[in-house]
Length: 100
Image (cartoon, rainbow, N blue to C red; front, side):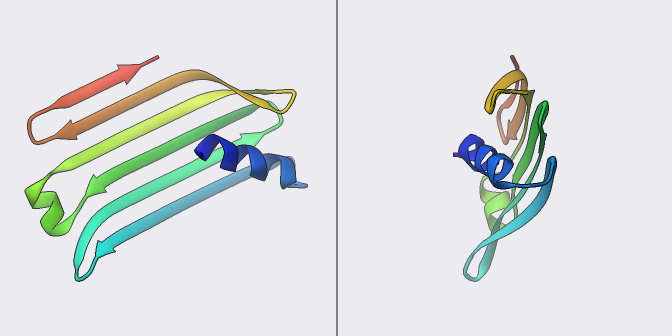
């Protein structure tokens, strides 16, 4: 889904580069639940996606979780080709790091 969204913005945009930063604060009334930060940048030659997800409030105390995800790649003939993927997740009992 994210790749399609980024690709659509790239194709529909008349500018040669697109940069977007978003911070979503998700609440399950009346409690804070998740902070989700998402950013992406794309131009004719390269793209990058970065996101961070963290449980907050009472949910963060019940199930502490954070995840950081990064993807970088090239754009060629309108297609996205990932070159690098990194993820780091941490919960109460586990820490995981992945790189491709």
